[in-house]
Length: 153
Image 1 (tube, helix red, strand yellow):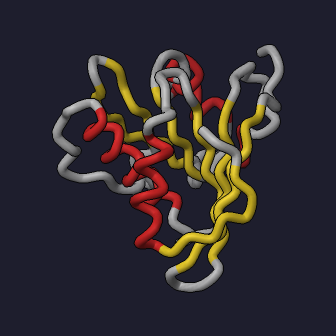
Image 2 (spheres, rainbow, N blue to C red):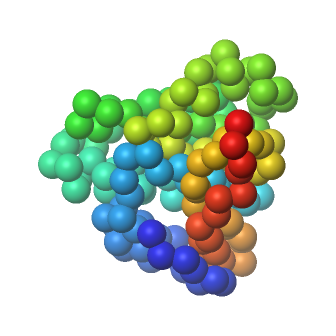
């Protein structure tokens, strides 16, 4: 996945943008999505998940919603999983452990909304940090960086 700095897209351009990005996603990749409420984190992830299914000649999921209340929603992709987390309501690492969060990071594709509690954790995982900022009702500024901020656990 490419790095981006201050790319401004309208919501119609998002689909084309995520189609290209989906081609670079591999099992084991972790994507952290930051942005204020309503910035488009779930919309971005929904588009990525749909594109991954199309690229793998699979039917798109019938519904891709924010996992704010269940915290985790999974999607099957060629005998592996896409994990879609929303950590907005998670208050402790114990809650993540109860979800098998740390084990789930291996060999799957992981999308995480509201990842702030993870940024300085010792997970020893490479990840992409995607920041979405609202410019207007229909435009978003996107920054993507590749990081390995986490150390050995």
